[in-house]
Length: 538
Image 1 (cartoon, rainbow, N blue to C red):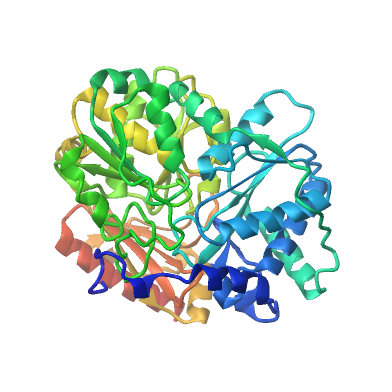
Image 2: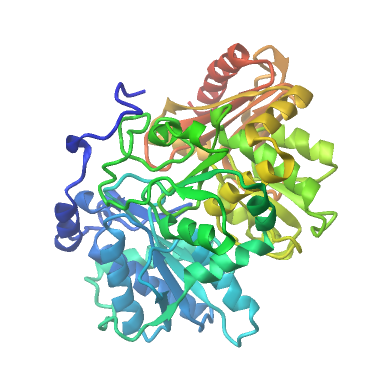
């Protein structure tokens, strides 16, 4: 924990926006250098122009690759494009438009030249593709999500509206790197003038009454605070307030690409993570001013829930509360609709699912795994421990297939309005009934070779029989919900579990762990987890 974590950013912490944008155009990547290649993680290609990791040539080549990919897939409909408030998002959007127009792709940009949250873009793709057109739409979101101000991000969403799967992203990244290596000869460009517009904001906001009980929220008169953290949801919250006549205050309506108003995250960096107490410190100062207070990250695909009685909720806690509430208050959902969770999310969700009599659908890390179930309604809720989730409409039909932080923040208000209890009080009730687990994620140092070994590790390679004094009853390398590889291992007992996965960006592996025996037992689980994993990958 950095000694300045949770304190207001100082001038020395801020980026030089002009230098960042200048580097975007001036620095040319060399794809023979690993750090300068186009690499798609779970949420697209990310990096800083200052490190020659997110520059004009990256976006030119990646957009051309997306054009070629969609052509190969027979995708001939419009491409929706939107961006968040990061400094690199605007130049990257302009670059992408030059290539899309140069390739005669029908492009739709925001009607009001507004920022576009990730869920609003997913909503737009799905709305078009449900409308019975002869063609299909897809989209691009220009965002590095909650990453620091110096970063840029570029994400492709195919016609299903959610994050592209690894087959698509691998093809796009490989083709983009080929184009860069060939000195950009394949790129076709034109002035980005021939574009159409789309009212992302109204389409999304007007539809909220079909998934959230807005009438109950209004009737309750509860005081709602919403902090966009300088992100793309800023004008959406004002529109939601006005459209549904809510007692809602946009706590901080300011947009600043340096994020000078942010408090520093745990490591001393500016990071717009609404699930981090350090990053949310300035928001937490207002917790007693509202009945419910929420935050979103820069592209609004994550949520942070603040209550007067408990402050910032652990994301796992709110997911459990959301699931218990929704599956008890949505009569239009399929009676066999499963509960989706990533396998590093809290076991409290498992216990809630058992209590509700619902199937638990446990998948690897990555929201893309929930997409098919959300589309056909077989999974009515999908959530990740990193404060990302979405669910289906009142009638059980798909809403978004990407994470929706605005939606989950509004759900917190619905819970207060309908039950008269804060989400944190409702979690305390769950903990009293099921037990109160201690949960934490830590990092362990690992060489690239060890990370590679962990990513390929088979659960059968775990030879330990006990974990923190309890018998090991399972060791998984594939998710039980869909059988997909988890790129690591999960080990569990009756009272605790840990999961280990290699980091995609640092020489560490992540240990997620939880114990229903308390914090001291959790510490022992973490110590033994590291020993078990190190023995298996050394």
